[in-house]
Length: 284
Image (cartoon, rainbow, N blue to C red; front, side):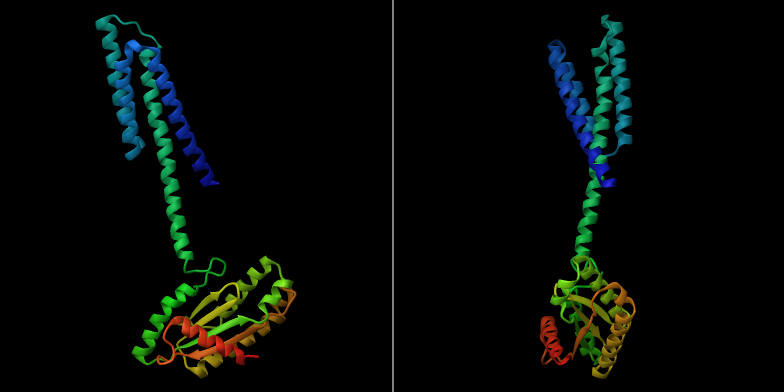
């Protein structure tokens, strides 16, 4: 709603500026005898527009007040010294110049807001580049970055590091029974369930959204990872009997594979995932 309002005000400011330009050109062309003086005042109006564009409305209005005072003094002097008559053309620039400034302010103010909004969106996209939008879990990109840190800690302090790869059993078949919105909710619910099964020092990732594949980096050994696997299996079984039973028309089952890090076997983060995924074959 706010963005649409900003767009509307920006368009109005731009259209008002164009309209004032047409009016000014028509006014100047209407009186060739005053061409030079009107061109000078038009340039002054554009100068105030440029200053307002790069500063703010307050400075623009102050300069407009000075211009109005100076121009009014000039008109008064011309009337007294030269006996010129007062008519609408004498006051044209007194009206148009502040309108030019206002149009510039209207355009630049809301353009700045749109630029800030675009910057926010860029930062959000950057954030979402490493975070899944639906589950707010770190994705494969984050895993590849974090895996190097975890393996470095594991090697330096001689700590066991284990990766768990979790998949929803028969995920492709489930798509036939559940709607797209229900599938999205499944990802969120299972993600929350998995998060409840790990410690604060462990990290959960959504490695593949299309295949419903999660990864867990655990600073633990094989016996410790087996305890986590048992905890996951119990939690999903309980959820199927309680929460998921009323929410979905199918039973959700998870397959879990575990692999402890070995620097001699695993060279890259993707190797770690691939070798751990092979362990899923034993979870039948």
